[in-house]
Length: 405
Image (cartoon, rainbow, N blue to C red; front, top):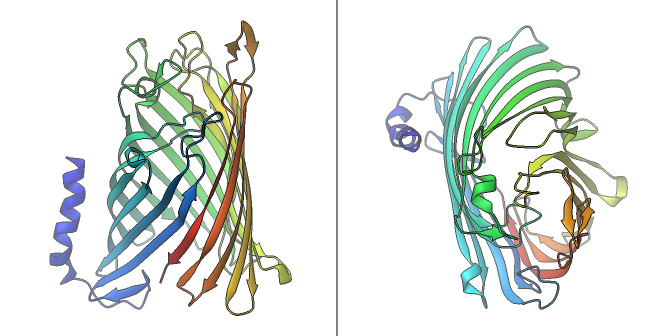
């Protein structure tokens, strides 16, 4: 039903286009008739992967690569309504291990209606992918997602606005996949519902203060052992949105997540949360990108039959430096860590599990225009864990290209 509603928006778009009026506001990379289009194509590391199974004993190498085309479409209908659609494909291939290859895909549709100081939005999306979806899982397996939601915001003057949104997402994982005897689908299949309230205060032409409060509810629909399969958490965060022209461009959120006690589905847990993606100038060195994330995630492996959780933390930095002859050099570092809430047992002893992945990479690109660049990249991974046999090293290199008009 929800997928049909999303398709209906796409089918109705040509008919509604006749009602759209001319607008000088740019809503995409370029315009075709009444439609604004933003295509994007990324080819990543089309070359070789030294350890496609993350095996620390007998690594298997293979030719590999990733190709991801996508398209965003906006159709203005009059001055107040925008109809939106987007679609993407992700082709991951392994020349010597064809069973690992996949074609991922996704489709979404939405609408935005502006009536005076009120803006209302609605959206629906569906996707399918065969990838690794957790730091603790090395097998590639299927996941299907379906989501829908909506929201509204109200401007209360030139600098202040409030809003709210509601969303529901269904996650379904491939049956029969296990990690050390624990079923991925039983641990992670869930229906997620969240309510969010927000407030925005415009501080300067480039900076907006943002306050957020969320209530998340996860119903674990495939776990036969639970009498009460619902887990509830609360998140409170504050931060900033930065637009181009100031010192930074991007967003920053810092806050707190809490899973209260006495929930059968998940252990009690709480901690700081972080969501940051910022770019800034670095003088003659070029452009610096900083990213960070921290939150509580669900684990596949259980402790005495109980679902576990872990605090996921990720930090990254990337530097892009312009060189002569339209060349761009890029270097990046990323650090990821999962710190598990409940201790595991190994060799008869209690073990506070902590897994860490370090990623570093180098690239050299030739920019043929602001929209198109081609070059080569190489990345190195290393994972370290207290769990025996979970460490690995990996290297991947190849051609990388990006087209974003």
